[in-house]
Image (cartoon, rainbow, N blue to C red; front, top):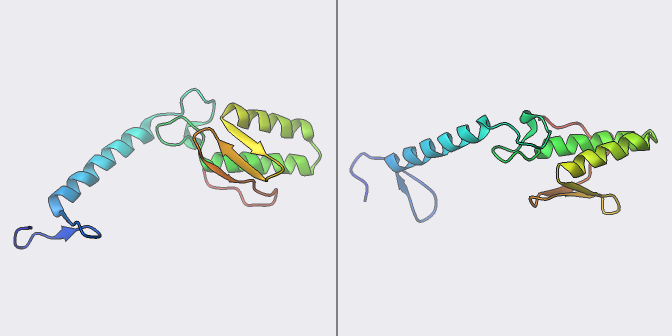
Length: 122
């Protein structure tokens, strides 16, 4: 039971006392800061496009590379499209053209974007 005047925060049946919530936020912020400080590991992807702390490419980076690949395919520049596909595969992304999807080795998946989709912020 909280002391008189101490605010309670939380959702559902369990409410956190204010001090516990602040401690949880501080712990999360410390972990998030450490994860963001780590550069992309040996993936070859720029550090700005890495998923925090894993060295894996971000979903935005994958989407932008897929848009570039679609643009190359539309222009019938199949050599460039194959290079982009090889780069994606090197970073753990498999592209399924018939299903119009992509899958990453960490379990992420998504729809393959069109050539005229706007690029995502990395």
